[in-house]
Length: 252
Image 1 (cartoon, rainbow, N blue to C red):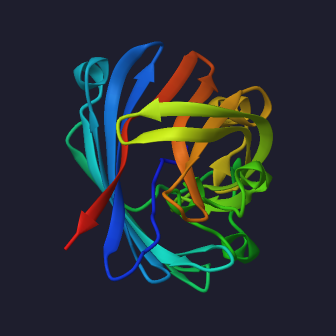
Image 2 (cartoon, helix red, strand yellow):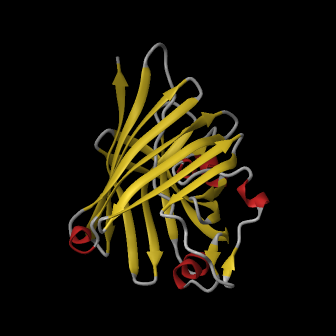
């Protein structure tokens, strides 16, 4: 699944940003922490984040990593670069994606992806056009809170191409350190398009049975909305992503 990110728009001569901190839990038990620092200069954004296993997750899956993404915000969010460097049980992994006008022009996976079998759904060239990375896919540009759940995106993570479609559930309110205000909850439909193995149970469950709910909050006074809470149903239980902090920062 795509991971969560934040971006903010500039005001006056300052370059504002946002700090967001999340706890990821499974069946009510903490398994990881996810933190992001985001900044906007003009119409360009940059997100830097890190993820680290914690609690029960640290006992079974020693994972840590750094994520960076950049792009621009116009009529829509246009990705320009995405890089993920992480270690899973001591094994380093790199994913580096470059974009031009929203189209994928570079993909680096280290170690290289393994040779795929006959049950693999290859990625056609058209599937790598007008796409965003996992961080950009978590952002929604909308004029009003009520319009957020009308959004959709074509996400590519370096291997998997999937379509993410939102539908309206409800308007609410949430309070976390750094933020208190109205939110909107959407149901997210996850549809793998290419770059995956046919019959893979986890993906099939996400596509047909999983209930994925995402709650968005407005970033300051901008037209950008970012996740502040999410639940993802899996075959073996529910994953919850909850904001511990969601606040504006300022740089001199």
